[in-house]
Amino acid sequence: MSFEDQTVRIENLISLIGSTKTGIADELAERLGVSRRTIFNDLEYLRGRGLKIVFSPTDKRFIIEKKTTIF
Image 1 (cartoon, rainbow, N blue to C red):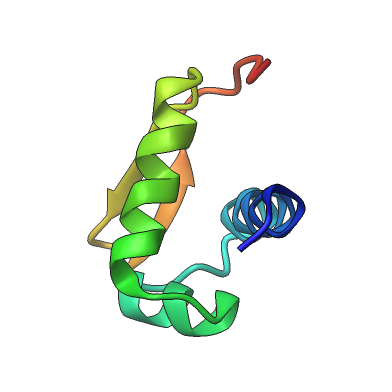
Image 2: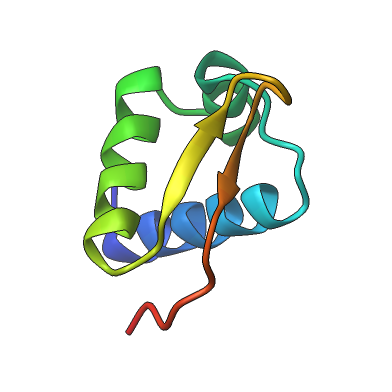
């Protein structure tokens, strides 16, 4: 997978989280066409850049708790 493909996937992931349409990790992985492990790796990547992404068991989706600058 190219850097460009990864960048597009990360952008799509952020968009899905922002639109509240993630579902659980397996559903999110299916939407993005990647493995569940890739989802968790991408979430850790974003967390490492300052986004506070958590899973809400009540809503069964990932959310960004506090908006911050990524780059």
